[in-house]
Image 1 (cartoon, rainbow, N blue to C red):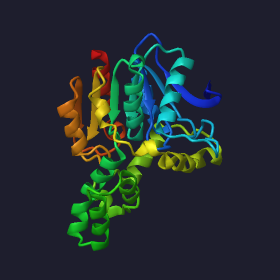
Image 2: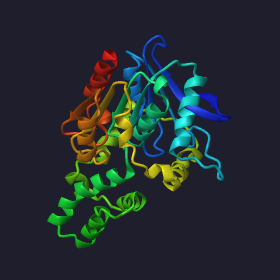
Image 3: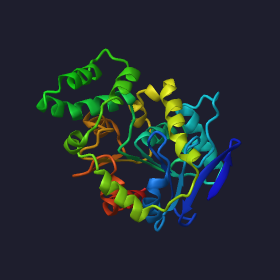
Image 4: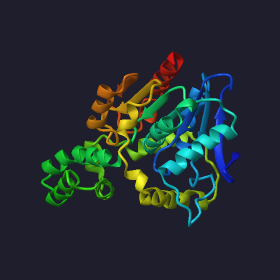
Length: 298
């Protein structure tokens, strides 16, 4: 396993491809998911480009966040830039999935000279709008099943007066069972596990690494900057931007997709039909093709 020291923190990273080619840096979601599940796609993209994929500070194989340390969104954005410098990479293309999409957007806004383009994969640009997208996705199911308690929760999330923090935390309490999973096109666990077993090597790490997920999420959810609305940043970025989103994705809903289409001058949208939140897993060849064509054109 490879580690790099960034701001006195050990960060686990993987590197694929030739450094002479355009560099893509993968920013995983979760929050706290790790780059492990993306390793197959990173290898595929590494056949054409230079790819860096890493566990964010506090996640899995990287050092744990200290108990008394404040580690919000902008904290992690700054670490990404310090990592670029430590790796001696002149510029790169952030590719952010889910929560990583928020990091990618803020990073591109804060460090425009460090990027060549940006790719958003089913991104979360706003905790508030993601909460509403989830509520809107599940509401028809609750209406069909006449599940009044759940409908009350959804209606609370959709109130205009609710705060972003409260809306998001309420959305996190929505319980997905098999019926709701099918209605929302969530990937079947058996299918996902089969993909993991086929394409992802066992990292052979300690139980401590797996347990970091909980503490990382807690740190992020406690941070005020997690609940910011960063949509306005999109129209201030002058480099090419690609939005890849699944047809049934509940993280980047129709509101954010339409906002991107109307306000981003140098933006491209690719909708993957019959796909939900994990498009790189559901249609790996198409996903690789979309990213490759975009980067080749930058």
